[in-house]
Image (cartoon, rainbow, N blue to C red; front, top):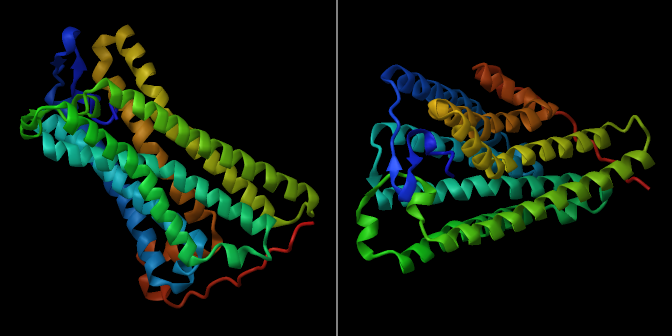
Length: 329
């Protein structure tokens, strides 16, 4: 989370926070670009959600339900990190309780993405390797149950951050003004070590899940005909999930790299932070539309019409016939 709001702050010896000055032109340009990217991505995400809600064929399918949950999660995360970025330029310091709500929600949405990716990969694995049992295993009810479990798991780290801070900080801390940064809001060292354990456990579980499902789908591809398109699409989808997970991992690797680069090039500290902000929190949001929006032929036929404002004919688009994947022996 240091990347989210690090554009205007730097740690000084003794724990003080310094605020390097950015020129008005640079600050305005950076914030305009961030807001434009937020607007474009939210328009795309909004048309996806609208397409999903307008057609019953989608919200009765577990695959599309998990996909739209990831789209909504990404939209929320993008809105929160953009808000934190702009607020850090405009106000510098805000009420600690308001900052707490923003940061905790941003942490929750950031940590939800890898677990949703794991769930989507398992769904693809079941559809390919157990097609005859898929309808009984992957039901709408169980899909929503899985989503609630993911929310509970990802809510655990920010809630424990809050409980530790309430126990360690004086009561007046949350009525003070702070620079809105995770490390400055949750200052106790135990929070850092606790989050290392949570993040390591979550990401290890997701990485192993993606590896297992990919290997199983590859084995199914070798056992099946080379022209089995559904197996190839599932394999490529899991690969894209893996690529998206690698981008999620950047949020944990980049802070050290960013600190090293700022040490080497202190005069470019604001530019370095801005570039990493775009690479870690903005660019990965483009992957969700690519993975399902354009690659899924049935969804694409509806979505493109809404995206290009041709809603008059969208309601008459006939869905593609559902193909039953043959069982791979």
